[in-house]
Image (cartoon, rainbow, N blue to C red):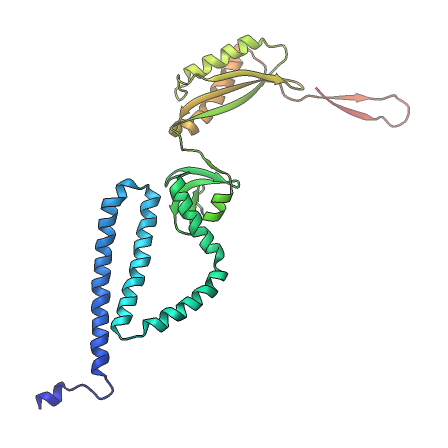
Length: 279
């Protein structure tokens, strides 16, 4: 009676159960070993890699490991892997032609990891889009803009385009072009600019501020003030330095000219033409 009670129904194949059970064990053990391998690899190799290198290494171990575990599990169930791999090879050729862009992005991703033009957390600009590098994957980079939008940029585009890394170096220069009246003493103006830069809290003493006379305009003499600051102080310097300079110009009575228009009338006979003259 006990033997009949434990007997399996006729529609259940005992060999299939053994294969399925073995495949389940392979999956469980494989995923556990995969997690351990991932952790060990990151501990030993991670300190020598950049953050984006660690991210890519995790993805490679995960994708390749999962594929290997699934293949072993399918083999445990008695599937003909030779036929499967052969079909996969034929399908891979067809997919390869259709996925040339993806392959190019993957290769470009490895170039970016090796060259390291930027790292996670850097502020970069590309094709008029600026933001913080959020993630760097095998196919693309995710850029988080300053208004908190997420922009995906293919790796191939990054390799082919001009990328500006704003935060690569610890200090940065803020350039301010200023126009003053033609009657102003240039030597006095340059001295005031230097004094304002020296008193600004965010402006660094070393390197020295760049202060030069750049040329003659239609109604102004142009000078350039280039003030150096730490990366984290750049936004503050952009707000404080122009305001302090404007206030100091008012104290020193230095004119910042603006365009004027003179309306001149013609002769009294016939329609009176209006002539606009920019001073």
